[in-house]
Image (cartoon, rainbow, N blue to C red; front, side, top):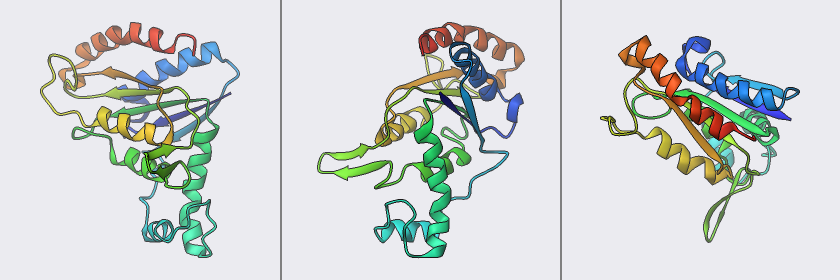
Length: 208
């Protein structure tokens, strides 16, 4: 049993998104105490953006692993291979992310660009793109300075629609979004938001 825990905030373990994701982790570990945790802190160890060699390798049809015949291209794809292997091996995925300028942080976008890969994690068919990864629960813990959803939302939300469109492309369709909103309103509001999300945590992680 493996849990892949991805965190994206520059505030690290003090961030609201991390603390929310840790509540998901606590519930999963209560049910699966022997689970192996694989952690990717994308701010502490940021991933490089995909480079020209990577793009050239994919554009040239080298989509099966890193067998490109070009040493530099193979090196560029090696990190993608490792990240995809981590994702493929995970029974559960927990992503902790703040909302940055209405969408995902750039560090999370870089990870997605490495794991959403034609011929590896999805194939193009006459019916559209079809994911190759087995589905499994993905819990996405989101923090936002304002309200991104609900009656009080006064800002666009490109984060959740983007992830709901992209992750199923590679086969991950069992998505649960959990939110702590209006963190910019101060610690009292954040505490209240955490209390409000507790029932959602119990409901979506129950029987995981």
